[in-house]
Length: 187
Picture 1 (cartoon, rainbow, N blue to C red):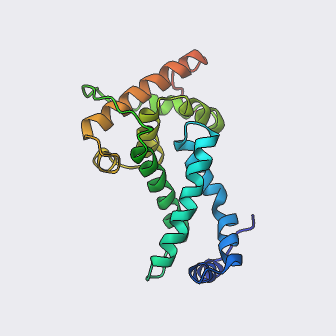
Picture 2 (picture 1 turned 30 degrees about the horizontal axis):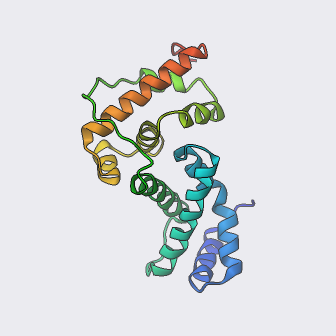
């Protein structure tokens, strides 16, 4: 879809607040790829991602109506709602199982290895992670949340968040090694 200007975005937001279906459809069309990308990262499979994708847009349009202030960064605002809706969905629906483990040493080695594969390959591998690992991995590495924030969002302890991330990294490392990627080589 063609890029829209900030003025057009503000006009669409105002229209969506008035329940103008054309404005809502254009916002939906413009942001559907972004919201689906977030939902795919958090969802176990395409079907669960599609379910939460719908929840995201319901939340986006509800929030637009209740927002009194002008939204300075609509792209970031929608992205954040998509992340929060996905995290809340998995926490609320108990789809995520978190294991309490002893905190393990974290390092950047795993992150460097991941840089060697394509985004689609990584998405496929990450989607194979157990739910708890996948959600924490996405919140930490992809969306940049800290363990204190993740713990609060998901209703878990910080040590559980850290251990889930550590376990996710270990499982990703093992999967990558099975694909022949076992070390990081700087270009």
